Length: 180
Ligand SMILES: Nc1ncnc2c1ncn2[C@@H]1O[C@H](COP(=O)(O)OP(=O)(O)O)[C@@H](O)[C@H]1O
Ligand SMILES: [Mg+2]
Image 1 (cartoon, protein in one colour):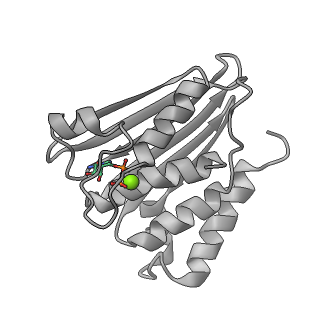
Image 2 (cartoon, helix red, strand yellow):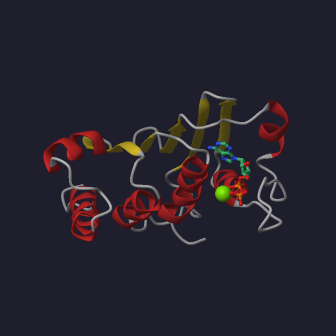
């Protein structure tokens, strides 16, 4: 995988497939701590201890269509190759929290990629799910909350093509600002 957006989309898709209603995403770059931190928290079906133990291994999956599961394992190997760590907490019926950290200055850190497009794909996969997305880069903080957007849209679905494109462009405009 080439960029961070693709790694995160894999984790978001797991949360989507776990029947989450709300997914919280934090992406943070803190220069003074030399740290990238990504937190994905869902309120989906969760995992039992046995699955949780094996979920970071590339052969762990509950899928029947594809024999291997890779999403979590990929992100873990990214973290480990960039002097970081991946920790997952999960409870059946409550949800799953994935915390990935790694060193910002590591030579192997991937580019950010297209975060706007990533959110567009996630929303498109299941319009009913809400997102609370926070992006932090040192002193800059951008928040994107689908509940607020739904209120402003007054009944138009988020998977309307014009809305999806607007969401993609809006997010990218805010997180690719030149002053960051
Ligand atoms: N957020 C989550 N909530 C519930 N189960 C999850 C979650 N993330 C991963 N899993 C479980 O772990 C398995 C492995 O995930 P992953 O490595 O992404 O592989 P895949 O999605 O291809 O199965 C999934 O099949 C699913 O059973
Ligand atoms: Mg997956």
